[in-house]
Structures are given as C-alpha cells and as structure tokens.
Amino acid sequence: MSDITLCGRITTTQPCSLPLAGMGIRAGFPSPADDYLDSSIDLNGYLMSDPDACFVVRVQGDSMSGAGIMEGDLLIVDKGRPALHGDIVVAVVDGDFTVKRLHRRDGRLALRPENPAYPVLVPQNEQELLIWGVVCGCVRRY
Image (cartoon, rainbow, N blue to C red):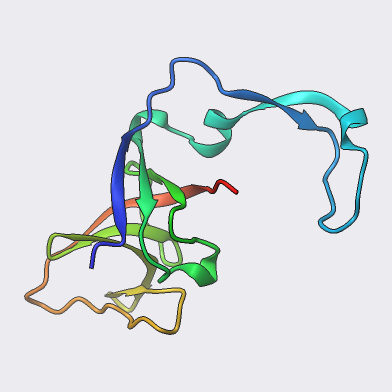
C-alpha cells in the first residue's frame, strides 16, 4: 500500500531566496513579469513553519490526484502540526505509509483518497493507525 517514499529531513542552513514578481500572474494571459521583479521569497520559510519538524516524501501512485498531488511530487510533511479534520496527512496503517485526507467525525477516523478509483480506509480495531504528519507543501518539477 505504500504511497510515499521517505526522502529525508530538511536541513536549512541558508535561506533559499528567489526573485518574486510583485504582481500575480494570470494563467493563460501573457504578461511582461520581468518588469515587476521587486522583491524575493524564501522558499524555506514559505513552505515550512518549523523546518526542524519537517520531512520530504516522494509520492507514489495517483490516489490523491483530485487534490492536485501527482506521482513523483515531493510533499513537505510537518510532524509537529496537529492533524485536523480535512488535512492531508501522511499516515502509517499496519506499517505501510500512505497519504490521504483525514476525515474525523463523531470520534471515528477515516483516510479518504482524492481519486474515486481507490477505497476509503477505515481502520478496524485490530489495525494500527498512526498519523505521521500533516502535508504542508507540494513541489513538482515540469
């Protein structure tokens, strides 16, 4: 069932700053954005609120495609953030890692995929479920 591969802990000794356009870019409408590069953004600070609690995992499979998470994406996972209803979480079910949306109602937990081709995981009494961390960022290369 493993939907992720653990890539490792994030180490941030220096900011990762890139130029930031001062205006938003409309998808589908060309814009001379180079004229508006007037500040920068630190990607470490943008993607993580607590770098010491964050890990990177690589997604395997397409069970979260409806949430915009595709195979090969890198997810930033915060192990220090409490998991709330509706969060996308990395969970361990019977020793296997998976990424799903946490559904919590009336004291019952479920892990919901964002692709109708996959079943909802409802842990049974004999199953071990551990919420490993909350997904707080996604990185994709094109």
